Amino acid sequence: MPSYFRITLLRSAIGLPSRTTGVLRALGLRKRMATVFHPVSPQVAGQIMAVKELVAVSETDRALTKAEMREGRRPERGYYVESAVGGKEGEGVEGR
Image (cartoon, rainbow, N blue to C red; front, top):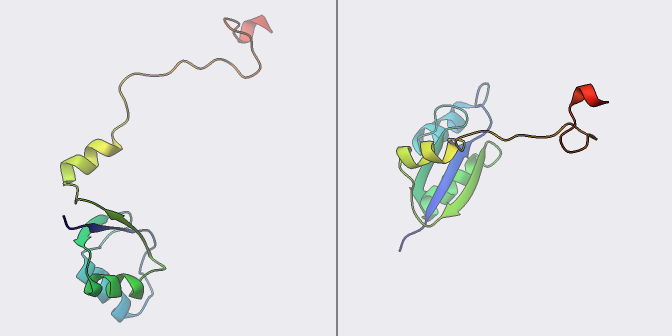
C-alpha cells in the first residue's frame, strides 16, 4: 500500500525568490494552512527539501478527502461545564 506525504504550508512565500514560489505552486500550495497529499517519491521529497522552512510534513498511510479533512476540524457537539477556579463543587461566584 503506498504511503503519502501530508504537506501543510505554514509560512507565506511573500518576498521569497520566484524559484521558491514556483516549487510551492508545483506542490499545489497556494494559501497558508492549505494541506495537500502527494505519494512518497524522490521527486516530491526533493521539492519538500527546497521549501522545508515553509511547510510541515508528515507521512500518512492514505490521502484524506476534503470532506474527511473538514470533518476532522469540526468540534464535538454540545458544551462543557467548568467550575470556577479555586471554587468548591456547586459554589458559584456569589458564594465567595
